[in-house]
Image (cartoon, rainbow, N blue to C red; front, side, top):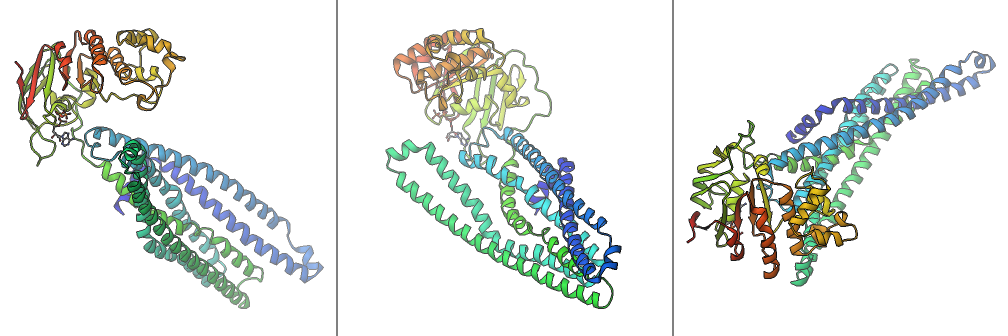
Length: 559
Ligand SMILES: Nc1ncnc2c1ncn2[C@@H]1O[C@H](COP(=O)(O)OP(=O)(O)OP(=O)(O)O)[C@@H](O)[C@H]1O
């Protein structure tokens, strides 16, 4: 239950909207109750008056009850409308709050702590689990509290006329709204959790299958993937069928409790009438009132079923949100670096306390403006060195200084201001060339964009496109060649004149001719910047002042 309390606390800043929705839902229920109870009384009283003869008909006040019937009918419509308006407004505000909260918890985890998550699972948590959490207000909070408030008020009304009828109503509402749902909830807990788990697993399978469609087809692995999905589908269908049976049982029990209550109210009402405690017309008033009262408990079985799904979604969301960020958030503002030199002294970095040190006593000094090539075998720690500089991963030993300041005093957002990265994986968003460039510098005007494209030798190509800068690049730049995509990354580097430039295998995957042309256009962009150039390919190293080889977690100056 602690996850649910935590969720309530998380939603509590919106308590004004939440309580307004709750209030309107209670008024709607009471209006319906008032309408039915009064109608029951009015119809019976009118019939009895009709039977009693002309004298009674002349003295009977038709006007006030019929005005009250109209009042309740109008109130019911208006309050239902307002309730929908308010609860939906509250729901969307809560959804926005939840998404923003989750994003602010995720952001410090990116990218290091999120790399361990499967992309589809992450997507699932961000979209589906948050949507499920959001059901809490509309499907659990409002119906449960409304049922309690309205149920007690209706029973109090009954108590004026017959205590036993009031007790029967309370008991019936409790059986119908609590006992039956609790029982179905108990029975439905397991399939509920299974449905959430299997739906998430299926979605993950499908997203991965779509992402890796090429590999699945080339290696003939599609049937195996289909078989896995079919098994999950079957398990999901079984869980859903089980849930359906549980829901059916719940409905039957609820129906039984409601009808037994109506019978009991009729009997107690009739006895009270016989004893002279109430008038004859008040008996149908109580019976019709009881009938209306069960509207309050109708959504409760659903509420408890949702609770199972919400608990599971909350567990998954909080588990991810509670992961400690790999770099502790910076309390103080980042210091101002004096220049942009880097000095690494005896640095040790391991990804987990029990895993071997990837950087192990590494020493490296990079004066401002130097161009440093970094080579090394696969797994030697080249990307790790960059992760260290970008503050994606914390190092455990040694002293690192950036611009003379302790590197630990900078967060990853601070370092991102000083560093531009061009890598083989520089991502292109499925939008226009313009938007992909503006990502590097939102303030760049048209002239700056074309200048950047000129430097990156891409302006002729962009001019030749029917919509120029406003041409879409396709998903992950699929409408561009590898070389053109890399040149967009170059143009971004021109637009963001950060003092540091990291080139992470920028020519990987390009043929020799394209690589040569790319490197020629890269040369002017390196000017005046401090550069790390990571590569397996020797061609770009000619542009470097010094080259270091990473081996055994240390950096050795190449001859
Ligand atoms: N996020 C991570 N968590 C745990 N271990 C990691 C992580 N990233 C890298 N490693 C490990 O650290 C070591 C160095 O990896 P790194 O990516 O820095 O090598 P690299 O020199 O860049 O390799 P490549 O040339 O293949 O890109 C490898 O053994 C790798 O398995």
